[in-house]
Image (cartoon, rainbow, N blue to C red; front, side, top):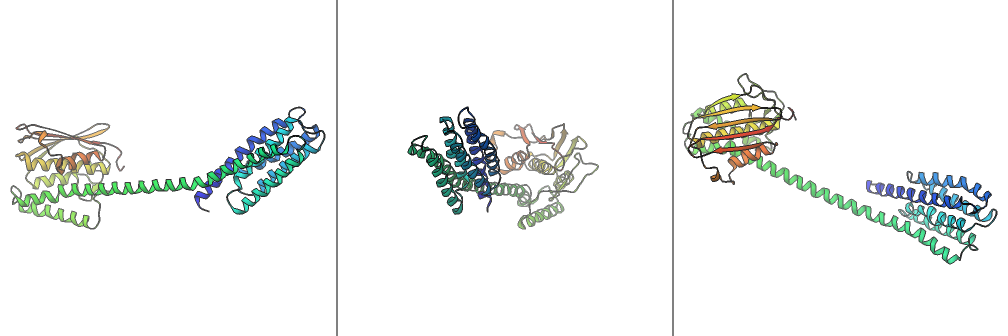
Length: 395
């Protein structure tokens, strides 16, 4: 039996328990009214009411047909005793018997519609109980009227059971459909995130190197170009083999590093590697600020790659060969200020479609909950403020 069928049956069982017990209590309250039935009939019926209550409670837990049988037999016993022992039932007693047979016992219909044998048992129970009710109460009310109430009492729970049985699989299909749509959307988002990450990495490394080569490596030594090209080649091989350049757990730290690196990325993007790279490329970077800062690996990766892209922009566009990086931190954030005294530019002239700042800096930091702010003006140099949340190392 699959999970959906089990859940359907569990829902029907619990509904039958609540439905049956509610009308059993109502029937008992009517039966104990003074003069409803004879005292002897009441005393004999009370244990049977307790038995019905126990059976209906168990009906809500177990799928066994035993509890349905106990409910029906005990109910028929109450009907026989109440109408044959002592005086005939009053109108209150008659109402109690109708509620018992047409409502309390009819709760069994909720659990007798799932299979062919159970449907057969439902039909037999309906006919036997109805016949007994009409024969034993024919003197108390016109039988046709009693039959109408009785049939309605059994048809309603049966229809509810059929509706639930038909509705649960439809709901399950809808849930599965929503789940498939969610998984497809998540996969598309993951693929888009991987595409953007690949584009950022290629822009920050390979395209930067190709730009240098296109300009004959002006200001950069041949050895630095060879080393940079080798690093880019390793990156391309990793991407071609399906690798995902993300941090791996390996502690790295240097005495001269302003940032205590918690994890080393696959690209070797530690702060020391950033310093060495731009030292080879002819950009003198002065480092200032805090001595040790701990960052989660993913945040560290985004922070250092964004910082490297800012320094690359200084090297390529500022017209100067010196930059300053100041790293500070507090209880919630780590900040890096990248400043240069270069030519500057009008911020309004930045093309939002370019990868350089929009993707490689701003979007990269926002992916880890950070932010970037840019300040510049023609002839006044440029300052970039990078912020990332501290988080917990190794998160």
